[in-house]
Image 1 (cartoon, rainbow, N blue to C red):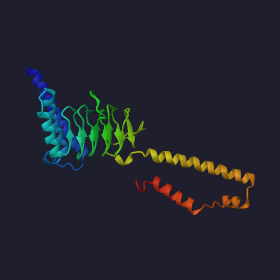
Image 2 (cartoon, rainbow, N blue to C red):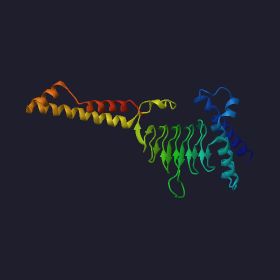
Image 3 (spheres, rainbow, N blue to C red):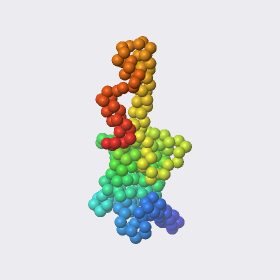
Image 4 (spheres, rainbow, N blue to C red):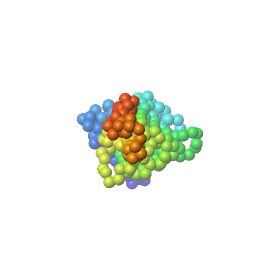
Length: 258
């Protein structure tokens, strides 16, 4: 019995130490331990949750939920006492984060503000997502349902994930699309390097359209159409409407208005 108590104590201490240290590793604004303890709601919410989860695990009624609601009031982060959170999980800023009852978060996850790990409908049993180790969930992202999110996955800000995601992938868009990054090591804090799958597809379609237009021009020359069409094709003249459309396309591909 004494051995089990000592083992449990070492495990708890190791977990709390990892929760504290990960903040200094991932947040350059963290300067000293007093500032982190007093001014980081993500750490405070995790500490509240670890206590409420222990009470929930031993079957104590009502009190765990009251603690989670108190934590929500103080930090803006709502974590159900039944959720399982690994060590070294960092909730950065955290306002508006919601983590459901059956959600599981692996070790060293990184969660930004506005994230929802929620369910769909009123199904019973396991109804919230399971996140592997070293998963990054960007600001405002939603992961809904009993999904399996693999290790080292990055979910882009604002994405809505509705399907399982294999390990070592990046998910972007609504609904979330998987983009593989095999062989490329990416810093979890480099959110600016997320790929734009929609722009890539549009660019591929534009390339195909340009190829077809070139083929059409070649056919027009071969068939010796009217002089006006031939001269416009040879000189590369385009109407103002076409030039306007080209400019709008280029602005979209470079992120204007997004």
